[in-house]
Image (cartoon, rainbow, N blue to C red; front, side, top):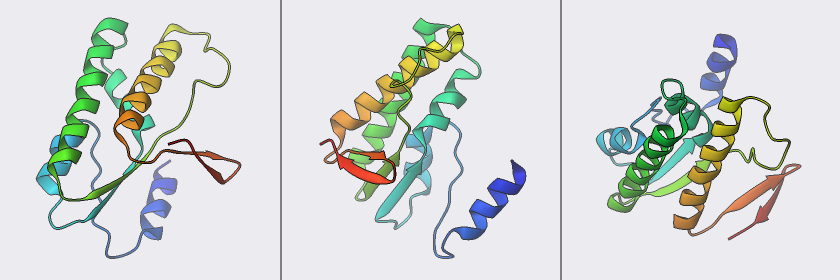
Length: 134
C-alpha cells in the first residue's frame, strides 16, 4: 500500500497543493485552502471508513458521520472555490454479511445523499462512462 500511495503522489501535477486529512475535513480545508479555486476531495469513502474506525455502533456513528458531512458542506459554502468530490456507491451490491459492513454501507449512502443533495451536478461513473444524475 505504501508503494501505491507513493506512486499516486508522483503522478500528481507539481503545482497541486495536496492535503491528506483523515477526519475534520471541513476544518482542515478551511485552514489550508489558501488561494485555491478548485478543491478535489478524494474520497468520501475513505473518510467514512476513518470515522468508523473508532465508533462502530450505529446511533453514535450516524451522528458523527452527519456532523462531519455537514461541517464539510458548511466549509464549501463559506469558501470561494469549486469542489469536486469523489465517492463510491457501495449500496448497489449484496448486503454485507457482518454488522460493521452494513453500518458502513448505510452511512456512506447517507453521506453521499447529503453531498449529492447539496451539489449542483452529480455523476455516476459506470464502466468509465459518466452518467449525469443531477
